[in-house]
Image (cartoon, rainbow, N blue to C red; front, side):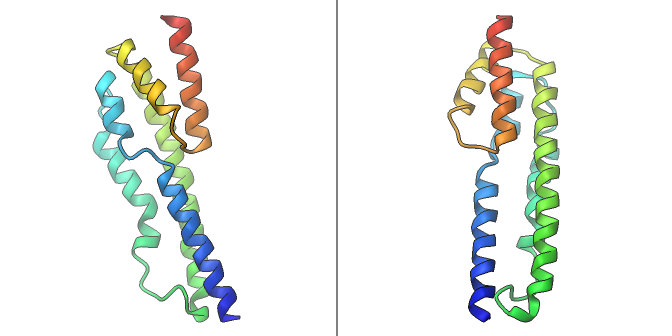
Length: 136
């Protein structure tokens, strides 16, 4: 029983690490490089916020008596993850609406689509890539 609890928490931690790793940490700065995107600080705060329920737990998640607390923390993490993903998509849209340099935007998208990020972000970047090709 304890082994199952530890195994589950370890799988969840791996999922958290993978989820965090699939967000480009420099996205806001990169968007600012080619557009009038002004949400860099807000973006940084949102990225920090979505990991908050995990970073700030005050209990031992490997203790099976705390499994309910761990489940609540994971539910909150998943909710925040979806919120961060939606916010990221919104930032991408805002940046592309305020382009200063199509060339830099194209270079950004080309570099970005080579990464392995969240599927919805990858999809949006592929759409932007095609839009830029059609437009310019």
